[in-house]
Length: 190
Image 1 (tube, rainbow, N blue to C red):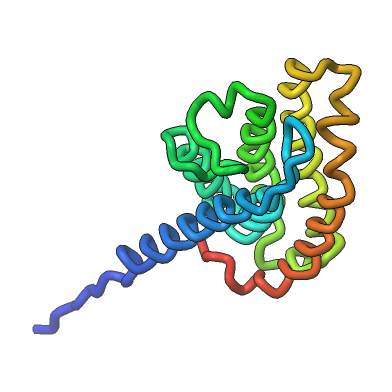
Image 2 (cartoon, rainbow, N blue to C red):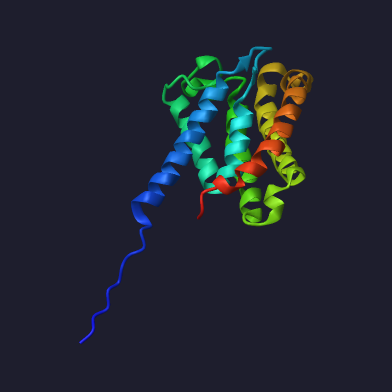
């Protein structure tokens, strides 16, 4: 009589651990780059968008959005991870709250774009990456400026909440377009 041995594929803990670590590292990167901050008014220039959009493209929709959600939760519950070391739910009600909310929406959109191109040559194309992260940046501006208008008025929202960030965000988009193609192989497999 012969016997059949069924061996389970080693999918469990090692895959879960790798995904958890990638999400945690991305959340930590967002928190660290939030501390690279230039205060210029009610909304500072920070490195957060670089980390948010990079994590979304590299990790994809689910993992990238989860990384941003963890970052936002850390700050909401009191860890000083937001720009300038701020924390708490009150930050979401302030001038920067819309930008923080925009991070989550942008991560979902950029991650979805990345997922739709995963495994194809387009996912390594700098122009495609630049277009996707530009879309994410526009989403952050739209959500952020909408809430910022409560504090500065619609007549000043572009001058205060968008225009000062354009040069820095153009540099961030260029940097991501240059670096992310090399990180395509680091993307966690579904």
